[in-house]
Each structure stands twice: as structure tokens, then as C-alpha cells.
Length: 361
Image (cartoon, rainbow, N blue to C red):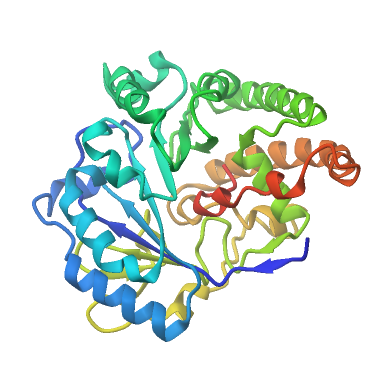
């Protein structure tokens, strides 16, 4: 398979700042205190996407609904989907899942990807997202699961108390894809214990994954598949693996457009006038990366810690990335051999859903 350079554009729409949960690690919690009653301007967003995508010949167009909790604004979502249908876009939604039901099955079935925040184990999930939230999410999801036409993703947020093997294995048979992401916070306690458990957990997950690959079965564990994609250069990331670069516009409630939907650190325009995607191509040069041997793979992982946290916490994330990448590299020769002899199909191994996640946990 030849190397592919992406020509798509993902428009990530902050539909609302409102949310019906109060997750302890929510990176968007500070936005709840203001503009909670304000919704995104659907007409202006639609006009911007149609004009911008045509002027730049983006193919395909990807429209992602984000929040807050986007399903609190179902009317807005339906309007945007209806009036952009002519672009034949891929639609994604990132939801906490508590409002998923048969009442919105028609909306969900128009999605390319439904990402549901679920932290694996019920006790761990409820401890950070609220008592009863696990059952509510899974009850709604299971009520529509058999009728869903869209690909589903379990999005696990890992805190220092997370046992990653248990969390992933707890949802691996419920969802089409599983991705885990390390909580972005300046929290310093419990990190040494997490690193030890994370290392053991990655060993367990890789052993499980490889055992199934040898039998011709591919479990869609996105971090492993994303690493294959990057290391084997099956497609070119023009910026950070999360999307910052040529392929991402984060549209805020007020119509401002940024290169990152979580930090809003780099304003590249607005939906009322124009967007300069060139401003999103700034070359991030993180001091901690230096001559690090994996920087061409993880690219520094995520811009938020480098901007907001002290050096010791940034180094923690680096250690986590080194663990993951180092362990994956050790099994990569066998993966390539399994592809070469036809035991597994490389087209199935390369998971394009990875491009709509952070890729690197």
C-alpha cells in the first residue's frame, strides 16, 4: 500500500457548552460557567463549511459534533446534517452516551463514527463521571447497538487510578473500536504507580492483540493500529497526530475557529469572514523533545501539557509514550510477517478511525 497524504478537512463543531455530567477530569469544564445558554450558529457554520470546503477542494469533508454534550442540541445537529448533505460528508459525534436512545437512532445512523466516553469498569467510570452514569450510558447504547449502522468507539480516559488492561478488556466486546487517552491534568500524585501498572497493562493488551492477529482476527485497538499506520508510513500526518496541522478546524460557540478544540490556543479565523489554515501549520518545537528517538512518531503527543503543565508532568507523558511505542516496536516485525504471508489483511489492520482520535494516548 502506498503512502497517502490526507486531503480531508475535519470541521469540529462545539455545539454547546452545556453538559449533563460533571466529569472530574473534563478539560472543557471551565466553559460551563459562561455562555451556557448560547448555541452554535447553525446557518453561519453551514455557510462556512460549504464555502471553505469548495474553495479548498477538501475531499472528503468531515463534520464532527462536539461539546459539552452535543446530543443536548439535536435540532442543531439535524439542521447542519440536512443542509450539508450535498457535500456527502462523513459525520462524527463525540458523546458521553447518556442521551443515546432509540429516539435518536436516525441521527446516529447517519454518523461515520459514534465515540462514547466510557471508562471500562463501572466503579471507575462512576467515580469520575457520576454515580449511575455507567449504567445509563450502557443501557442507552445497548438499546440501539443491534440497529446501529455506524462504527462505534469506546473512548477511555485514563487517570492515575486506571488499570488500563481491565478498562480496555471491559469494553472490547461491546464496541467496534477502543481508544484510551491519558487524562490531561497537572495532577502529580500516583504517577509512579500508574507507570508500573500501565507497562504491565500494555504487555497484557499486546499479548491479547497479537494472539488474535496470529489467528487472523483483528481487534480494533486504535493506539496499536495508529502506530502501525505512522511507523510504516502508510499515511502522512501533516501536523500532530491529533489533527493540528492541515486537516482540522475547531469551531467555537462564538464562531471563532481554532487549530485545537480543547485548548483554543491558536485562533486561525472565524466563520463570519475567513480561516487561514496556514496558521494551523505552525511547527511545534517542544523543548522536552530535543533529539528524542520517538518524536517523529508521537510529535510531542499533545500541545496542552507543553503549554500548561510543569516539565515533570510533561516527562510523565513522554514516559508513557515511550512505553507504548517501545513495546509496539518489539512486536512490529511479527505483525509485518503476518501481513506478508496473508494471515491478516493490511487493509483491515489500518484503521482509518484512528485519524479522528488523538492516535497517541
